[in-house]
Image 1 (cartoon, helix red, strand yellow):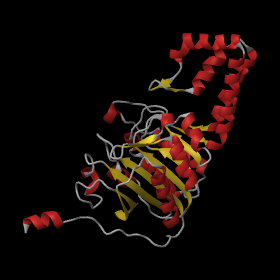
Image 2 (cartoon, one colour):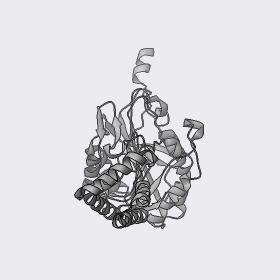
Image 3 (cartoon, helix red, strand yellow):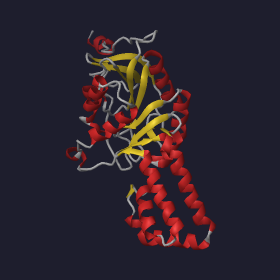
Length: 340
């Protein structure tokens, strides 16, 4: 009898499995929660304590855990302690509700992300969609390491997922490091109107408390413009610090307009061509980098702050035309970065 109870007891809720769309809300916020890495932190409990749906806001979570961290949030999610399989949940003022069991999935596949966004749009339609991504990040290399499946979601896959699902209004990297990368942004620019991320190392603890502010904003001012929304997100994040968790007082975070990225890239390509076309120009650039490279803001040894580089090059250049080109690049970056 004891053995049967141990084997047969299952706290799992019955999936709600919606078959018809809910009423359209102003916003749907999606958390692509890839906690399938070790050692890893699963932010589900902290996220839903602050971010839950009350009209006019839907909140959905695709959560995939790792065997080493699955038990951290499984009680909250009404799942067996050792269950690390993926599922889609809805968070509202009454708690967290199982919508759909997914079994074992790779969070590093474009199809997993695309299916999640399509599912949300089908059954929880909204006027605007915010996609928040959780896991590790590595700038132009992408995000979302799935240890169980030895997979990683690179930026081409993320582009394909957003394209195939119709895109989102805001793409936010809520923890992944180094994702405010021009190369990463450029891949998804046609499928997300605004892009929010850090060019520095990061962590979910920087989003503690800010999620409450974001929820309150979307519920009390659902008609806020998308531009004003992302600017408020950055302002909320500037209120809080993560020093008690990782010993870091500051974090970089920016919101970028995707429709301004083409101009930035075109100007930078023009500058690059000009340096490469003339030997004397090449020598000037090499000389600057040899002398001043360490003065340019860099993160994790490979994310160079392009605006800071442009500023220093404009000061160092003795060629008037080249100097003006760097200043123009600075201006274009300032037009693309709507909050930081």
